[in-house]
Image 1 (cartoon, one colour):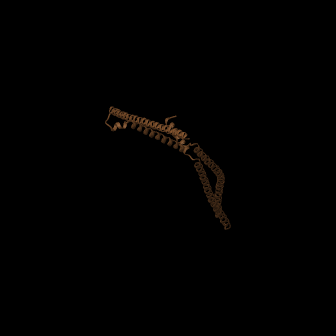
Image 2 (cartoon, helix red, strand yellow; image 1 turned 60 degrees about the vertical axis):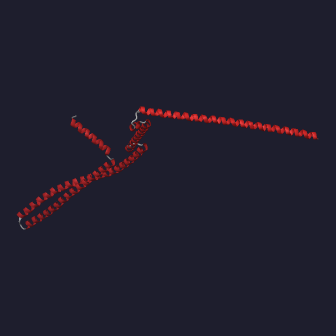
Image 3 (tube, helix red, strand yellow; image 1 turned 45 degrees about the vertical axis):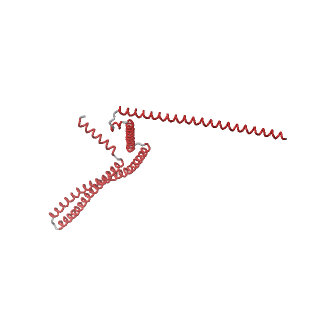
Length: 277
């Protein structure tokens, strides 16, 4: 197989594959039906033309038959008048006309045969067209039902070109979202690490570490000061608590002494009453 033959074969195969994908069976059936109807119309026009030609020959035959009758009358009249020569001429014309009539009859018969044949073909073609029309409508109904079922199945299973496009769109959106999230996380990390400050500041890494140490030292010193202050306040609170305890003890002793004195007085008073009795 030569290069041109292979190229032609590849092109035809590509075109056939493209046509198979783009072909709509229902439109193809309708087109075929219209083509058959056009053929039927052509057959009908052929029959009409053939019938017209036959009618013209029949009209010509009738004119010749009239001439034959006319020449026959002329021959009789000439014989009656004793003009045998005229009678002979009339009979010769009659004979020629009759020969023409015979030829026309053969042509008319042939046209009639063709007409009958075309009529039979027309009837057969019309029957096939009606049969094809029934099959066409049946096939269209089946195809449309199958197409609807396939569409529903694709929708239920999330397949098909439209759903594939949707799935790819979702995947692209998810990828872009992930990229944006990763970029945002990277920017946050750079911001926390101070990478952006490096661009805006003229300090180097040593200056920043020294500032961090100074800040830490200041914080530690302030923390120690707070701890010292808190320790002083706790000591003062302890001394105040001991003083309160001592005062409370003194109060309790005085109360006890008061209680003891009152008892002695009552005892002595009771003894005096007994003595008097």
